[in-house]
Image (cartoon, rainbow, N blue to C red):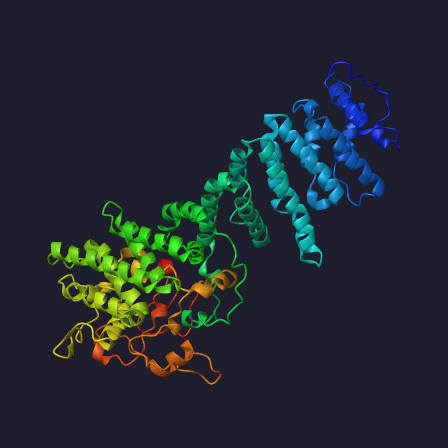
Length: 577
């Protein structure tokens, strides 16, 4: 700094048409920055003035701004946060979204140079770049125009390149970047375009050069924020009075599945899984966040898909875990095994075997105690077995070795135990399970079905307590259309399940498509009038029970849950069940 002298009266060089080399300009700017420390601000204030945002810059003004930024890049070692606060403030107000590529490149060069020059500016520079993940509010509409995608790409590609440059120059920068990204995430009250664009950039960052460092912090934070958004969404915001029932929601016109090549590798899954266990698993109000895990599993069925199921099974069987966590885990497990098209029949059978073994061991250690709450984990396990088999029994019975494995499981002893799981679990699940078991000729004695006289009971209302986990099936069809389009190719819909009582020949409608849920309900379902004193046996049921109303979605409150509601009523929410 010694020897650099600038006169108060010296004309600001960037105003000249020429005559200064790059090195001369840099030297001159160093002089301006030093002069400020002695109280000489005249030319410095003029310099800062060029950096303040202006609209509709002329070509000459653009040239001056680019020259100013480039010269500052060469003089960054002379910038001091105390003496040059106004300069840093002016730079911080500049937005790449407001300029052409020349100014963008010059501004980013300054930011990268400043980050590399002094460690105390790392956070400032990183935050400056992260704030460009989302454009100013007045820019969003223009991004919908024909050149919007190109404009967005020009900004964001440069931002991510600058982040990589800083990471290369300052090895510790990625460790500082992660908390900055998390702290600047849009709130749950931000609008959708802002949130979506920010998340896109988080995922791009995770999949890029610094992903290994930042992913372990960012992805769990992202899942946590998704969960916050999830529980903030009321059913009234999703369902309208004319919304079709959950049975019909599975029959939306199939959307094209795009972006199949998105990379949710094992490392990302290993980061997401603990976050799921810590937050989503115990969040009863979660409606959509769990599908992030479902999708990740679908992209790696043999690795992530199997691991997810095994982890849920372990959480359920581990006695140290709180009952509510174990019940939630087995509800997730049952819903996942039933709905995941990508899981093998052998793996599903293995999990069923483990659940049956656990329930059977539980029965052998307990005598009669007809207090459902005292045995809620056991009933959760029993219901999980039945629910999975409602979806999978036919396909498992069609494979000889798996059929033999099912026949050798001690399920009948569990259902006959004095704890009476068939009277406590959700009647809709029990009825459908027994109907299929009878058709498959399970639990037979002298050519007679053992459970023909099973009664429904009010005890099912007590099971699960206030949380109503008996009604909790987390992977019911996703109600967000955009998200559902990603899930759809990997998802089993009840309307497509071949049950043990179905004919072998697939039913085909007039338009050569498979029979729809509407057709099924209209032809096979007889309305059941629920009566406080009504007793229903399997023999009396000549209808197709509606598994899709065993759901976390709102529905009319029915004593037995046997009547299919014509509409989903938004006035009823899961919290009231």
